[in-house]
Length: 88
Image (cartoon, rainbow, N blue to C red; front, side):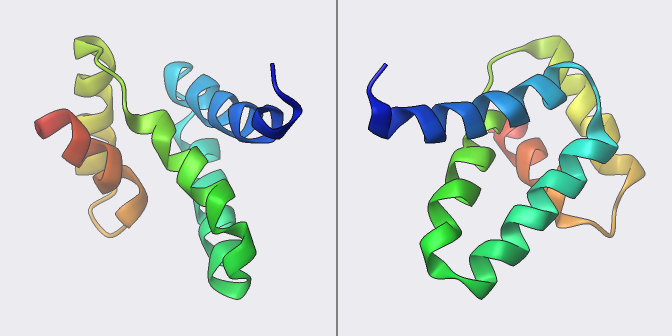
């Protein structure tokens, strides 16, 4: 793996592992933390982008879990983001 790709891949993998494990509370906290970091420092936006790429999965079972997560957290944007991918 290229050194320049190591950081983005590890960021993506961390978020995807939480997603696949159904650890939604931890995933939401991770995304929220990275979103706040990106808002404070545009240089950190790349980390947020790679984190959000974790939601690009084609897995029917996982999509159903994501949709249930979104319904259970209607006031949070974090679960709505992957739910939008699963509906498209």
